[in-house]
Length: 119
Image (cartoon, rainbow, N blue to C red; front, side):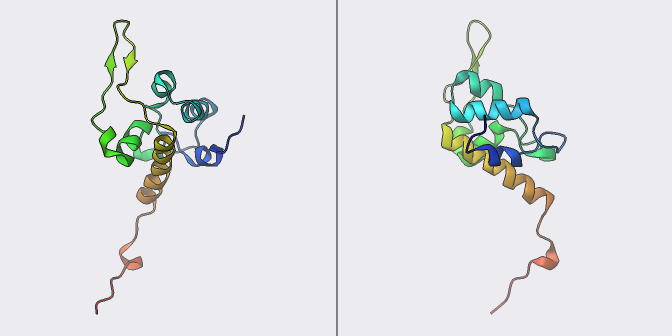
């Protein structure tokens, strides 16, 4: 099933700098459609920033610094329990951040492309 978020997911790169495979896209799609403990646990470790190694969790921390200190705990069955799950917009912004971060690292502004005019 294709969603409105599909063009965004198509721009993500996995850890080998190739487009995300079907499983990774499916997990990202699931957490975007229904952010909850299960879908977040299935997706938070996905690398979305290619060779930069940026994961969905790291990207979520970048777009909302208040999310940075959120650390999961384990329940009595050994399952990760997050005290707070990012909402849909937070996740979408994190994915967009992962894409632009990767592009900035891969294509930095070169010194000859950047000049500051003095008055």
